[in-house]
Length: 221
View 1 (cartoon, rainbow, N blue to C red):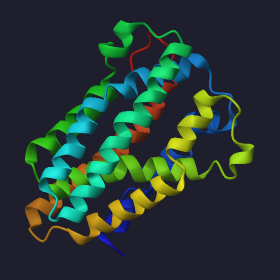
View 2 (cartoon, rainbow, N blue to C red):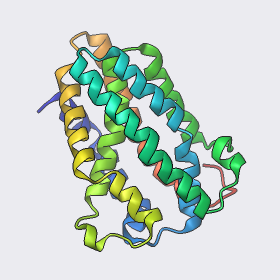
View 3 (cartoon, rainbow, N blue to C red):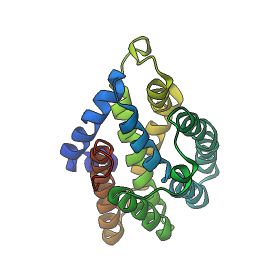
């Protein structure tokens, strides 16, 4: 068992609760309400800045050109396909410009953004990978539940979010990211403990973020 698999098992309860969350069930079933989807996407979009910076830091701190090129390709895809999905959904769901660029942030959103930026500030490859790995691997796991694309929801606002996290290129990226994380497993006890805690906290926040997406507007989340 590699370091990634070991850390996943240590927080498997939160992991499984996240990938089998009612929010995910509703998304996969195509019956997620527009209010809940809007709330989720508005908050999720606020991570784009920190996530882009994490990918950039991974490019800078990766130990080889081949690894740098992988992150560079993913960064390009993130800036195009995923951003296009957000903008299309925002238009369809009538999200005001102020809510796209500067909404009131939920507690979980602030905490997750802080975790990303803390990892970024370390300029440590394993720390950066820990956050990226949880974000991408956990999303790949819930999206894998969608099964055959023939039975995916009809509405693009649901099916496209699944496709972005369930396709051959994405699955290969997650596999590579997991292998890369295992390959740079920290030997230094202090770094290892910090990376472990970062991984665990990222999983906890992923679960809490889905919880918050189902909290009605006007209720603290």
